[in-house]
Amino acid sequence: MTDKTVSLPEKRRHASFIKNNLRNYGMLLSLFAIMLFFELVTDGTLLQPLNLTNLVLQNSYIVIMALGMLLVIVTGHIDLSVGSVSGFVGAVAAVLMVRYHIDPPLAFLACLLLGAAIGAAQGYWVAYFGIPSFIVTLAGMLVFKGLALAVLQGQSVGPFPPTFQKLSSGFIPELLPDAGTLHPTSLLIGAALAFAMVYAGGRSRAREQSHGIEVEPFALFLGKSAVLAGVVLYFTYMIASHRGLPNVLVVMTALIALYGFVTRRTVVGRHYPASRPNASPS
Image 1 (cartoon, helix red, strand yellow):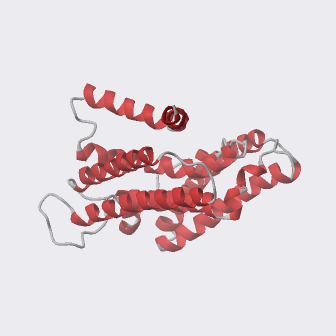
Image 2: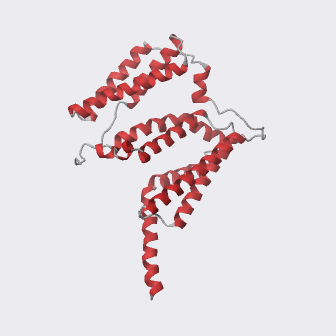
Image 3: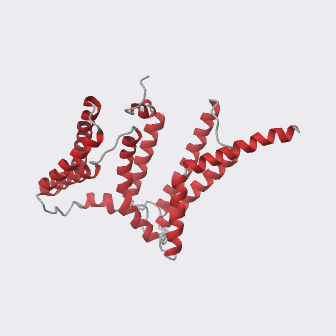
């Protein structure tokens, strides 16, 4: 009777964790199902190395913009001007580098400061005047779309410096001896990333457990870590079998790591959702 009494709550705890993880990772499971569907429909073309590389090159900027948007949405706001602001800042960068021949690093720094100033200006009206972010960013969407056209004078600007083009279309240099069709440097980076993700997950689980926080069962943690590491290694292998890791993928991964550190390990990041407009004051 004792074994049955003990095992029943344990089974319920495992089932509860599995249910919660299915809900928390519903988007990932949906993405996996979509990828599996198109992999079957395209007769394996979707996960070919060339196609994966093209997907990364064409869509990494969306993930980079989504990182900033996520922090805005978490606080209960919305930013309708993100596309127009990105276009305006990009137009300024093009003019600085092509027409005024400013070095890409300086133009990069200037545009970062310009984007931060625009975000601060729009946030000022929301935070200190209580104007809904929908109204402020809707106005910003129209204003910066027009400013982008004015800066470019309705014309395309180019060509960009080769060093700047490599940021979006280049690949990391090969530092290890050639291995035929594979790029060992990219494989090594992917393996290091997979190990770091599993190690960080283990450290986080141990830290929560030491503070008396209920953690997921060890078997479930091992299974999740194995799947995560396997996906990263497989994706890296496919990418490395073409031309290696794109520079923009490295930038995107670094920004995701920085975002995770800020939101989980800093005081500002941990209190960020507390700034929601409907949150009760402490």
